[in-house]
Image 1: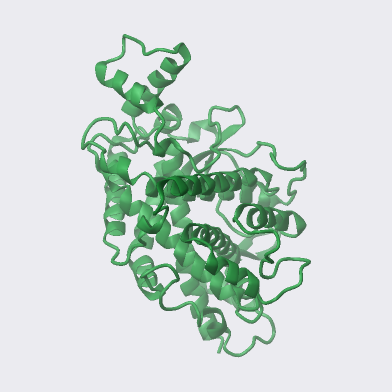
Image 2: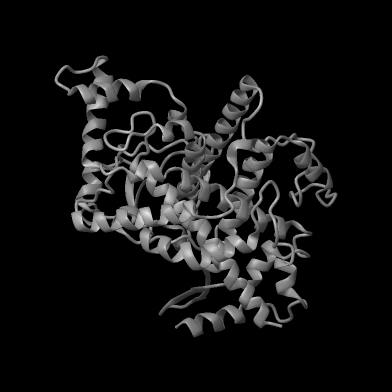
Length: 455
């Protein structure tokens, strides 16, 4: 089977590839990354041979494979009722009886105890007072949860999972891959993200932007180099996410579609069109380096959030006690592995200096990212919308973790975590989003090998 897919991948190549195709995609994707002390080779070895296999196993568990999402929300920015009519754009929701009881009953919290506490909290909010029938510990938690803190500042526009339109989706049955969704509609999404939400002045031309004169990106990269590290990081995160999605689409491309079967596999031509140094006029390698930057940011968040998951009271609750214990054991193994990474990104450079200016910049950062999460409801392909919403929520959760370090450090070893909370939705999105980035790094190794074999 694998040999057949490889043959189809090779058949998807153009008749005559330029010499040095592998070198043209990857020669600049090596060594140290900008704004980091880490190098590409260290990430490749750590991800591909240590973390990726364990993470894949975790994401196949019941707790992490089911994600509740509302794909019917209207686009908040422009009138657009058009939806992709191709069958590969469709998302197959789960019948309710296929979702584990614990997930359906808990809905969005991470344990029986926390779910009950959340329900009591919501009831208290509705009544406008704390119910005297609650325990002292619960009353204290309810009061503290309602206070404003850094952790409550969400970076994403989260779906209302209690909406009648919200449905559970089995992510394993709805994989991210090429759907045929492209052209003006897809371009409009990314153009809105880059032009309106990445802090870029209108007079600075983005490299390869459609319908504009191109100066080889000189003005853009001069601007990018001159802005503060936070705004530069914001652009690199979005570019890295874009690159990661394009790698998934190139790696799981529809190579054969007949009445009897479909075959998906790597399309090297598609990959080169997006990342070859010559074909992209130098942009491809930069995009791939931004992917590695995104990897470091999300990996750092996993290393920081370990105390939240290490608490004995914390459960990945599905209702299957033995399976839940195994899943938590694997989760902690992955988090300890993430913590052991030798060259973590140092987020202390973010929002440093004058406290008032730093707070203002942080709020701008948060609102810009939240706006991008809203744009995902404008994606016309439902499968693309699903994975776009999940990956932006996952990255938003990673940012929430990084900017809540003081709250995480105060988490007690047992009992409610009070100041810092993660919903089940955030947990599932965080790990699946990092799983997508980890898969992209692994797929780069596959594309590198294919291109080397074509010499």
